[in-house]
Length: 110
Image (cartoon, one colour):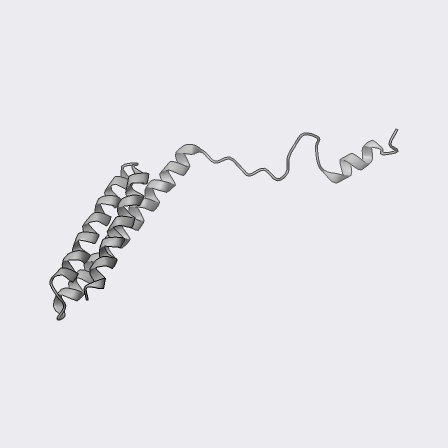
């Protein structure tokens, strides 16, 4: 015998076989819904930022390629937002990255 009584086990509050450090498993539908909203919201925000930058650059004395690159990047991000809202979140992520890269490349011509 180890000398431990049943009262010591009850005082710790732990049951045998239960891991107290486990994360709560979320519903897969809720995770997918959150991913769709995140992709759509991020894409919309990036598209609006690209359109605003395109409008601001078009009024200045920059080459025509700069506002066109911002507008093209905004279009790609808007397409990513649309695909993200339809559940194609992986493709939406790549479109968002591509759209921002097009905007950054266009900014290099300024």
